[in-house]
Amino acid sequence: MSDLAAFLAEGWAALEAASRDADDPMRLVALASLGAEGPQARFVVLRRADARAAELEVHTDSATPKVEELSADPRAALVAWSPERRLQVRATGRVGIRAGTAAEWALVPAEARVSYGTEPRPGTPIDGAYAYDKPAREERFAVLILHVEAMDLVHLPERHRRARFLRGDGFRGQWLAP
Amino acid sequence: MSDLAAFLAEGWAALEAASRDADDPMRLVALASLGAEGPQARFVVLRRADARAAELEVHTDSATPKVEELSADPRAALVAWSPERRLQVRATGRVGIRAGTAAEWALVPAEARVSYGTEPRPGTPIDGAYAYDKPAREERFAVLILHVEAMDLVHLPERHRRARFLRGDGFRGQWLAP
Image (cartoon, rainbow over all chains, first blue to last red):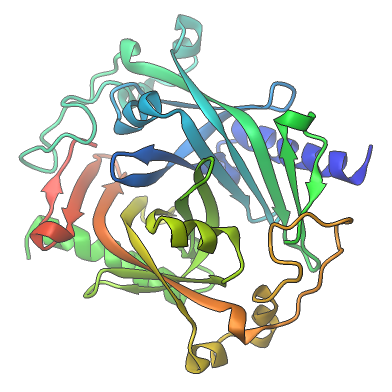
């Protein structure tokens, strides 16, 4: 395996490990989209990382502004940082949105199901801090899949390394000045 | 102080504390901008948070792609998460870019000065992982200031609270469904 291929594998391995470990700090990633007034970013939980398909998955309530933004413009960026590995992973591409399946909903812990279905919908002005309900609504469970077009890895031990990998050339990779 | 004003003060206090403490996990924030191919995001170090002026400051090499992007379109989003406080702070606005002053450069630790001046410039394709130099170049030290137009706070203890604050109404604030 070339150094570039090994570096890419390291990036995917870090994401895959984080997606399976609730205590991994890299599991919380920032997702940027384009809103009506410019870029928007928020933290989301990384639920799946698939190196082979070059896909990253997060779950959300379908009634959130981010789903509205990504429906209008699917281009997005996701960035993750691992303090232990001193590794930053940046991915850009387009987000596909679909309803979660019954099998996927079955895997959502009972206490987490209230994250899907807030009334009024998330981001709506309300009269007081707690003037909302949180029923668990399976029909509001949405799966967002970032189809990665470009991945930029920065590794920050003593000597810094950076490379960019593009789907267009089979993710062969190119070293960049860090 | 109203509950909304107290919530906003809590958000700024968290950012101010993080900007002064190298060990605070909230010091590492994601900054999203708009690139030629869509949203871009990367982690940066929060250097200053000024509640009174509603400004957030980060430092960077002026030759980075993010400076190019923000020069073309100053709209940006910054998002920070405090695991201890279970508090997410999202800020959007426009970024002003200026050269750092000699007094500011004097405060940059010697070992950090090599972050300003990489040759070839950051993001340039290079022949091998370490085919670059890192001289310390004061003339590449740039200060980015996000002039916050909107701040969205989400607090996630047992019962969630969310509010949005807009410069346009003096940051009076409005509760939102979380």
